[in-house]
Structure formats: C-alpha cells, structure tokens
Length: 307
Ligand code: CP
Image (tube, rainbow, N blue to C red; front, side, top):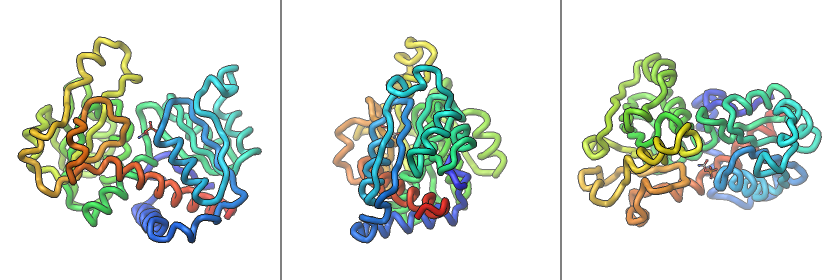
C-alpha cells in the first residue's frame, strides 16, 4: 500500500508525474470529472485547516467522488480517548483513502501502519506537510519552468513551520539549489533538517536575520507566519510574531523575476499591498494545491488497485 507521509516517499520522477497529471487536469478538467465516481475520501482533521481540508474535499468532488470526515478532534471519538491506530482501522471500513492532519508528529504514520487504505499526511505537528510541498513545487515549476538551479529564500518561522521542512527536503534532490534561511535566532531551521538534508547532501545554505540583505540574490522568496499554536508561551510569540513584514519598499532590490510564495494562512507577514505585484504567487499556489491533490488522489487510488 502506498501512502504519502513524507515527501521522500515519492521519487523526483513520481513528483514530475504528479505535476504532469496536475497540468493535464488544468488543461482538460472534463476528462477527470467522473474518474472517482463511487470513491470516498475521508478527511480526518484533528487540527484547524482551511486550505488543506477544503482543497482535498474540492479535489475529490471535482474527480466525481464523495467526501466524509471531521474538522476537529472534539467532534470525533478521539475526544473519548480513541487511538489514531483504531481510528485508521475504523475509517478503512468506510472510505477508500484518508487525508489526516494531527498535532502530534508521526500520527499519520501510525495511521498508515494500521489502515488498509492509502493515508496522506495533511500536516503533522511541526514536522512535515508534504501536500503543501506538492503545491509549492507545482507553483515553482510553473513560474520558473524548472526546479533546479534556483536560490530559494525561506523567511519567518523556520523552526515550527512544517511546510519549510518538507520543501527543503523535497528541493534538496534537485541540482544547483542554494538556500537562504532567514529567521530570528530562536526560529532557525531545526538541526536535524540541516544535518540530515542540507549537510548530508552538501547543499549550500546560509542563515541570516537580514531579509533585505538577502533579497537581491533570491529567485524564490517563501514567506511563513510565526506558528502561534506551537509556542510554549505567549510572550515569546508576541515578541517574535512581527519579525518580518514584507512591504513594497523591501522589494526594491529584488529581482524582477522573483516569485513570492506563502503556504498561507497569512497573518501579518506579507502586506496586502504586495498582493497585486505580479511577483506574488500565493493565491495561485492555493489553486495549484487543489490540482496536485487531485493528481495525488488518482495516483494513490490507482496504486491501491481501487481505480
Ligand atoms: N497551508 C495550509 O496548510 O493551510 P491550512 O492550515 O488552512 O490548511
């Protein structure tokens, strides 16, 4: 049974195949509108979400399938103490595929080990968010025409931002990448990501607190919000939350071809005055996320022998 728990579960060739399918869906939506007729996606969201849950649901509906699920732990039997393992076994009796978000790192992996249907990690704690990475990769590919030979700046909460960890891991497999890691001292990329991904593969990276200083060399600027829900104390969050606010004046020295991404939700870290800048890609990124999730559902159901 194939699952998507970590972005490394898929080879670069498989990611390319998913992007090809997503591009084909964009070009020919009618061709895919009935392919999942009779199939069910369960969205098990133990943490809040707008984009990921609703884009999974929209993806399955646009493939002709159906959706069921819950959007908060309190409305599921987790509130009565049911384990993730038992939940996965139960949902395997009702649905053909699961998308799970959970505050505990590793919970979707536990679900995958106990389910008899494919499980997709829709975000686990501060760990990984591989389907956001699918959206990010398609956005970069469509904007730049390549995933290699790019200087990628990641800015904000690089410690708790799970989308950052998955994106670095995914992009580390392409040639000619350089990462510029822009964050406050307290919110640097975790050591395990630097050791197991960047240093292990000899990928050049710099760590800085200076967004404007880094700006001129960037091809991609990936902004992130400070993850309030992962902080142990509110004072630290309040002190750090506005560390970086991207405003038009900060783009003065940016490349004309810079692409600005953000996984969203945005709090304060990108001024709305940037939204009309042609370099702002974050709402396109949302749309591409739906198409990549459609491609992912198709791939996993086909590999499970359900389609
Ligand atoms: N990007 C993202 O995961 O957004 P949601 O938390 O709204 O799903």
